[in-house]
Amino acid sequence: MESNVVDLAEQIEAELAAAGTVERADKERAYLKSGLDHHGTPVPVIRSIARAALRRSPELRDDQIVELAETLWSDPVHERRMATVEVLAASVDRLGLGDATLLERLLRESHTWALVDPISTSVVGPLAAIDDGFGEVLDRWALDPDFWLRRAAMLSLLVPLRNGGGDFERFARYAESMLDEREFFIRKAIGWVLRDTSKRRPDMVFEWLLPRASRASGVTIREAVKHLPEDQRVRILAAR
Image (cartoon, rainbow, N blue to C red; front, top):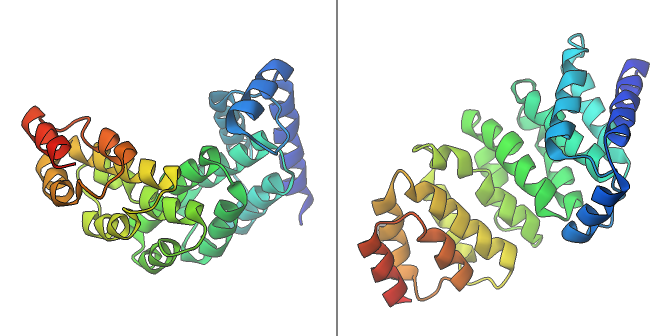
């Protein structure tokens, strides 16, 4: 591993540690039920530190970006792993299908929505939107025994759907297969994607959800109906 990558990771670590507080670290660890070490650095500050480090190092090659991400992730410190996500999100135009194995490993090792969700929405999602090859990756994740991978498969589709585009058919297929699950983070994800999709296309969400309302969990329904017109919301709640 080249020294400039190691040096950059050490600089990021030093800045993350300096910006944290013990009080915030203790609260964050308890809130996330985290087994990682915590510096107690706020998320906006983590983002600023990671992106400033990249701006200071415009000479980094694509493979060095990946090395930097892997180096940051390698220590079990929450803020380092959040910085990893920021590095990858800021460099998504330099990633591709060949990085799917790395992204899957990071998702498997995350064990928390605080890492899984931004990896899914800010890294995998943009890659999947421009490379159809990620469809097979998401299809495989949607069937994985690890519920965090299943959640990632759905949330990777979230942003385009929120913006009025995206692949609702693929999401609907995933959601159909998971609708009867009891895992809270799956139920919440289904409702979250439906809720955000409904902001621009309420009729599509209503037509999909109404015949499935009796199967969907309360968590899913409560999220999904938040932005539906009153008459649609009433019909779905009655059907449940």
